[in-house]
Image (cartoon, rainbow, N blue to C red; front, side, top):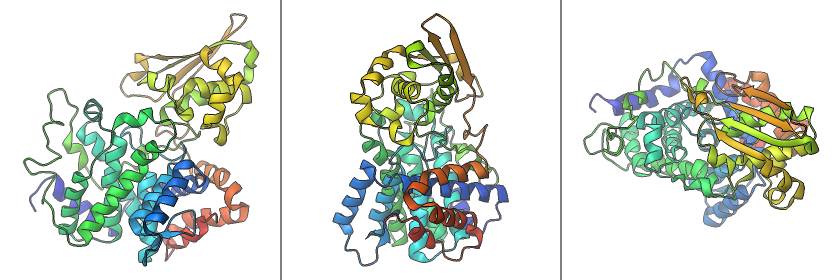
Length: 457
């Protein structure tokens, strides 16, 4: 193995199980495991979850050595179980995300980690380190390839970062030797996919596939192929003609930065850059929701002449999104009417299409691009102004939503969010037991006990 990106990444993966990582990084690992478990529990009845579980059972429900589909007692083959679990975890806009990498690592990586821990009877400490290793690569890879360049090519970073992250998590958990990790990375590269057309999805099913199910499936297969002895192109991240050094990423106007993949790997961590969704909506819409929840206390719907939203980024996508949880006019209208935003209402296509009060308010909401909010360092911010019918205005500026890296959730915040989401499904006692298990992962001899604790059926 030659010196280069591949060797550095291989060394990181093979050393992850025994690495002496800072306590604060391990704590973040546990928090994101809990956050993803809560997403799986609450999203078990979502369309993407139901379809994926049915598919898995039809495809391999008779598997002799099956893994549990998380949140249920059903078993399927390992790839199918992880696929269905990941689809469940991103059944709604409630799981974690990395704003700087445009990936949502939890659904695929945590699902894979827990399933491997169940089958192999691995410890909670091993699970935590495997998940952290997966997050590290899932969040680094899109930045190394170039976020803007990927968009210009029509690729979805959500689709390829977690492919590598899922495979890395499995390789770390199963302690793959260096050569197997090397070959596995080549199979990851072969399975990179994902189109930005997920923005056109209205049912949150194809989106769940691109963000979670597909990278989980592809990452699992890459790891299983290498584990079964499949050989691939060695040093695939360095070799001339390889995917990572492709001309499509290295164009003159590209933000391609390959060094980012392995720079200070194992010393500087991506975990602090991963955010939590405080509200059950898409990441870029979070600041607007927080602002509206503050402002709605001062008005009633009949007092509102208009709502003006100024924010950075691709604002048109959120001004006209078909998906309710991404559509700002819909979300603002619901908040004005309900004076809150409940989980069920955030992604209710029925309400978006049939509620006449919502339909009357939505045209009053305008979404405008504000380039000033894109100054370096970029802030995921929003300014919201409500104009009353008497001409007076109220406005607020949200620089960082609670849960974003500059304003992170605390240990208690993450626990409170998880408790709120899971109690209605599992009950108070079981929810408390599950939360305690996650906080005690470092001393848990068999992390597979999480599987039964998560089961809603």
